Image 1 (cartoon, rainbow, N blue to C red):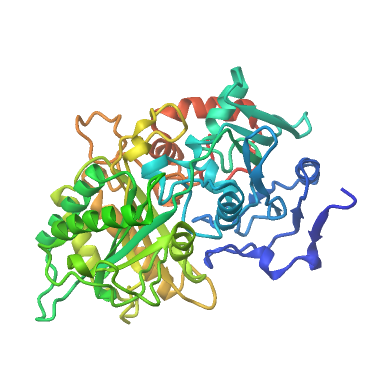
Image 2 (image 1 turned 120 degrees about the horizontal axis):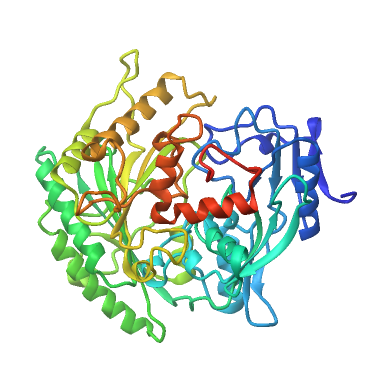
Length: 531
């Protein structure tokens, strides 16, 4: 690797030591490899392991836990230089692991007129996002990112006696390579090898237009009445019905912000269909949002947001206008080109400390869940010293799921949650100059989200259940691997299998066999790697 980029010791950048989440850093980092070719990726792995380093891999640095940036991390393979995307001579598309969502979207849209149903946070890296089951604003229409992947270039090192090597697996692979192809579609990060490149035989045509609207329901009305628990139950039922029955072109985010944020917010995107004219799409959008307005009309004082829409994704409407005034719609709406929609919904907020949790819902929320959620969202939070804590950046986000995602069998990819109708992302954020989980502010936020989550799922022991339990009609379907949460189980607390079961359900035994064949030494392992 004479010409390779390797930073060691004093050559390291301050930016090498920290991810997007300011909670995490790697103070003892020794070496960073930045490969620019397939050969350099292979050499980086061989060199790191021969130097008795266990390298972690990053492409966008957005991992929700400290799987890369921690006190024991000594070597990182940074994939940022492998960041191409496009179309090959044989008609297939490719995306390299170092691409960000934003770069991939631009390349695919402007050069080829296609897109990928991936996430909206612009700087998330393709390496982990796609292989962990990537999902985004077009997923109800086109499924998960892994549903489109037809091949991988991946560097593997099955055991210590064999050097790392680059192999290609695809839909035609057989035997152990077929198992690896299956595993990389949803369980890829930190488990089987280092993915260099994704291949797609085809990709969906990008929509021409999108209608984006935002609404808000105040926690307290102008007369001083507070939004009540029974109203939250009604709102959750309405939202679940929308998710179950909505046009697959529709994607929605219900942001149940803490009462400190003053309002609950809703963001909805409706994308155009192939062949739609601007006139036809706008007419259909008006009709759809009229129906949405009538569904939400029972809630008093529904109107435009009075503050930026927060959370992942963080959506901002700096110059709002109402494009649906003729139908009396009370939200903030914009008719956008698809590229404008990508720009509008690509925010992820500033770098802060954060903690996240997830769950899939198979149906409406139980009364116990609603009660716990309401109490958590209206609870005033204090530090251990009794100082009030601003929780305005804390929320339970409920994303519409279903649609095309539900058309794939649970055992077709590593992601088994194919019957879910909504997906939940619990989020809390706080700003501190120095990251420290033992600070008063950190402890208050972490306690709040952990207590809320445990209370919401108290009927199943404080965590979501997976639908293959003995309970005949489960409500939840486990958790999302790309939203890792070490609280549900990890290698250090003896509950790793519980966490893996929540992520992978009935697919776990096959994934464990695959891990044992392709990576029995556990290279790249983290606290929730398959074992």
